[in-house]
Image (cartoon, rainbow, N blue to C red; front, side, top):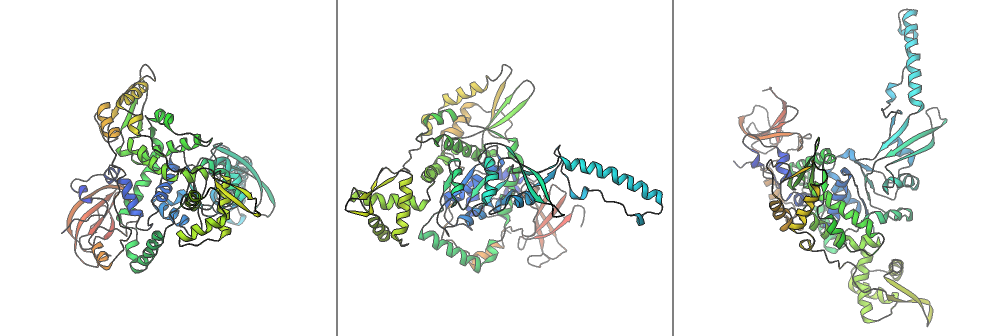
Length: 605
């Protein structure tokens, strides 16, 4: 009988004495691509959008969370991309805010704490004793005295209490433009201007009287805006990446096929074993990234070569470096480690590799124009594929010329009013100019200001900025932090021996990194009856809701007859595998269909 396997991970590696599944996943050289492949089952195309949403969400668990704007016309899949990508992240970390008012935000997301930060629960409020509950007057009097003492303490705790809204490690998703009062309250936090802000506001008490409430908001969250129409939100654009989901007929076709597949084969879209492993890995990162530090040894050389053209380039470079660090942290099990040993302490740094740089710079090339201009993708497309074409034919032209060119090239026809709005935006960002037509003052003559495609960004050749000598020089500077400082290199966190600079450089900085190699998944691939039958031969645990990479001790081969009927196929067959969890529980997997038979306490038969 074939060993149970997932479609992405080779579970057969885990048999024998038992191997930690988390280590196997963390060391998988195609881990990121496998995440994207699994996500592509429900989100077709939109590769750049999926990657940026994923990395932005992951940045919530780092010291430098990122902001992401999704801009574009309605029905392009902005909200869908976000919600599907975030399904791998812990639900308690995702806040969907939308038009939430400040009062609702505080009461829904805040907790009441005392002056020293201790949480105050409404259940801690002392309850006045009732006379008839006591056998004699003396007992009642004693209880009444204790109540008054506790009430006095309770009043003192409440006097200097405040509501605390902690955004650290949270992913804020605005599916619609945020309430302006809520946005203004959160803005200093979202802008990373200050780590903690304090507000006072009036609110109705339980007795319907107005009371002054004190609220403290702290922590930097990762934020994703799916709607950025409101002008007051645009102020954050210079502190954010801006992307637009793909708009193509091919995407729309694939999306329809996916919708049809969901209706025809709903079981193909249940949470499978792969999902549980990937979800578990995100939880592992959430719980451990705060303990990791990242060093980018090529940071100085990268900064010197990074093209600077606007004031916002300073922020963009900082955000790009943050993405490089997020990328390295995601691959923490596959990156070299610098261990610095001081006189009384020891600390380790994950070293960002060439693969992190290459991957993020390829992404930056895709999103650079929309980020630098805050322009939706369809306007960028309009400029390069319509305006530049018309400008090659005539030095000056009219809105009508652009309208005619667009409608001749694309299926989604546009009116001259729509084209005029796009032109106005391009004029605002300095890509076009307009002057009144001397022959007809009712219309404007248009002219292109720059014909260079802004997105033609030449990525800095990594081998030109970072060589073995550069790496050794960086290591030498790290070793000079103090006289009693000593550094050593390891290939990864799992490696015990020390590595040489030459070995680290050759493996992580010289050749192309394979971490992001595409695992091809045809966009035309759809579920079928044959695939549905085939799937039952693979490992599918639908009754193991608590199963994740953190919980697993081992998965080992086991052969035993079973007395209970399998919940999947109903057979009294045999068990081939046993999953053992950290909490001492274990489950058996049916050899017939791969479903979990039951979850039993250790020691039961």
